[in-house]
Image 1: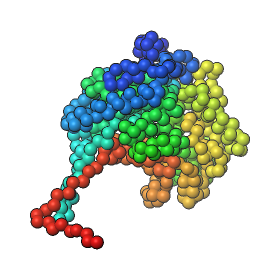
Image 2 (image 1 turned 60 degrees about the vertical axis):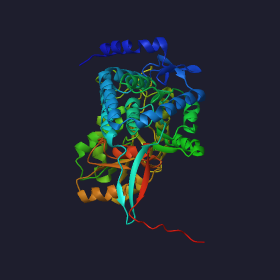
Image 3 (image 1 turned 180 degrees about the vertical axis):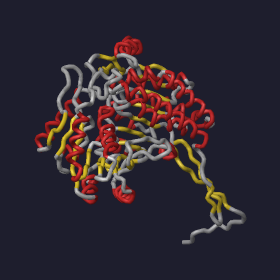
Image 4 (image 1 turned 30 degrees about the vertical axis):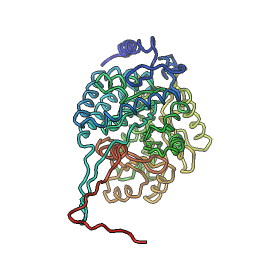
Length: 501
């Protein structure tokens, strides 16, 4: 197993060029400076990683022009040729997987044990959508008595992709790969807290032969570069991953240009554990789905709903497990939870610890800062919560679990559905008919039964209510990035019908 000292030496090697030259925008295949610089700092110790070129509305305009100019040729390229380029991108990701993972850990605080796989998942995204590219435009034949209707699909045009700071590399590939496979060109604005691996992805794409202007990178703030991107008339659609409030703002900003939007937003996802469940497996899943990835994941099961009859025993076992979770340096292979992304977010999570105590819930584990440097917090568990408490209603987005009790199915569903969000739900029961009843009535876009979150790329991914609009995955991604056209051919001596007045 690689030790921490070796990991740090490798990281230092990869970061040297960014320390010396900063992280630049990449537009039309060329490095582009910003109007100024901002800093990206490591949440491990708040040390400077690099200066980042600050993109503005003018930078976005330049990137949109490059995407517009590159669009006709890229859209016209046969799907088989796009497939070949996207596979070369996947090869490039795999070749630089260690560099990507090290940089992601240092820039976000995510633990190596998870980020070491993130780059490979990004490569899988590119390979999956690469293989779909040759058939992306395929349509249907829909005959009527008088006409032969033929549908076809066409890329919508230049699109904007705005990605978050949690697992940013994998989530960027999840959006960018289908857009490129569909024939769209892209302007990518990563989160200002985690710009490092977005630059690596842009470099890999261009080294793999992606034509200049097909993927453009603009760094900057949401109120500057982000707002300019969502309002730009040449950008035909916005794919966004982030919090629900920002999604609402983006929808307003894109309204004047009737911009298509795809939102993967927040969640307050319930995991329902019934008394007949396999409690050992359920406990493992509860731990994994809230305390992995620092709890900074939209699909985390941040509300535990446990049946009264098993609650005491389940809580006792849960508390023991939570207290054993290792918090530490993200590049240490033994670490399970690293630091939160930024001081601002650390303070938000800490505020919810105080809110939970003030509301009268029981702080059963964690909630305290770890160390004096960096933004580390012990994984937190509140029990004896009520459904109306803020800690049971609002997204905390950290290693923070709120537990509530229920008596029967109806109460479990009322609690589970009684929030603004509806991204995922997790159901643990050995009663198949109960599983079907609960799954049918849960207000969520995705439900896992007797399972943690297991991604299958052909399936639809997305939420309802304040958790999002639209679906990713398989052909659902192409539905967003492409327009459908119908062409109707008259059959035989079809007689025209005219309306009289």
